[in-house]
Amino acid sequence: MFDTKVAILVLDDLPVWQKLNVTAFLATGIAGTAPDAMGLPYEDSAGRAYAPLLGQPIMIFAAPADILLRARGQAFDRGLACAAYVRAMFSTGHDAANREVFRQEPADAADLVGIAVRGPKKDVDKAVKGARLHA
Image (cartoon, rainbow, N blue to C red; front, side, top):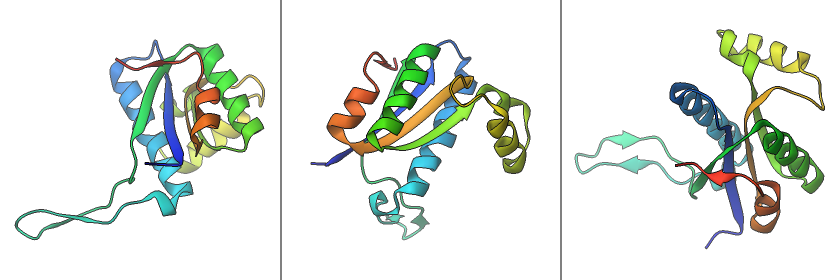
């Protein structure tokens, strides 16, 4: 039904609240790069309007740090849209500070706690190889 796939990988040993936080932030990153993937606004039976959601499923995976780094490399090699969250972002309080600590991470050895990717299904599948569906 969909030509593309969205996958979010979170570090497997994070506390649950951090996994949820990272997942939420990464989902917005993908939505921001894919306005064409956004559905239409929702409306309930009383006529109240709700914001639109991404119009396709998002697969959530758990992975160790080495799989996150490998998946990020695969995402760049394959030209996939990629959002990332690094551990230092947990200690900041706003977007500008997040971007600053993100910029300070070593490019090839970032302390990733999550990434999200979107692109052709087969490329996303290859990028997330080794990760397991989050339980």
